[in-house]
Image (cartoon, rainbow over all chains, first blue to last red; front, side):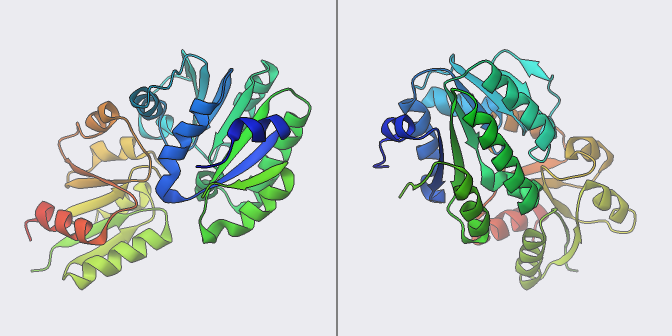
Length: 175
Length: 117
């Protein structure tokens, strides 16, 4: 990944990273490693435990990260909240996800990572997802938080990527 | 006699693709669109193996599994930790955990092994 993430986020408040699927897991670690400050991390494809395991292996500290996990509740019994993580019902629970993100914004986190729009599309159709992204970007504009959205580079979802690209400040292809 | 496989997945593409692949290998295949549909179809079908997506709309898979006697192999697009995977595999009828996207040859091999074909 040749993109200077720090520089891009200095110049833009909201960016959409289009990631090749083969490099996806590597890129996810690189982005988090490059960010200094408090991070709110919304995960729609890996459990909180799985992400912690991944970051630990990559020697990424997670003390400064608050996770919003929309996966674990669908596969196991978990509370609504533990230290370092809010659990929401499913990747399709847009309202719950939105409420959890509001807390991140309200507490003035430095960064919000949304991983990923691609997974949200598995549970919701394109129109509500686009509306969700638009509304979220508007909320972020009124805050000091910078947001990074991920999407996989898959041609089936080109339309949503194009639409979401209109809402964010910059679309960056990580090739 | 051909072995019967039930493919349970809310994604049409996955259901149809896996059905086509397994039928080409000589299996009989029935499909279900979620855990509720699976439970309903199990009243009339006795599959040798159920390939089940771990995360689908409707009744959560973890609530449906205890009601199923047949062997189940999970199909998962979700990434879990090793400990979570072990936990998910604890039910004695869960016999495999297949990560999506899966390799077709590998899937055929694993289904063959699990059904004794």
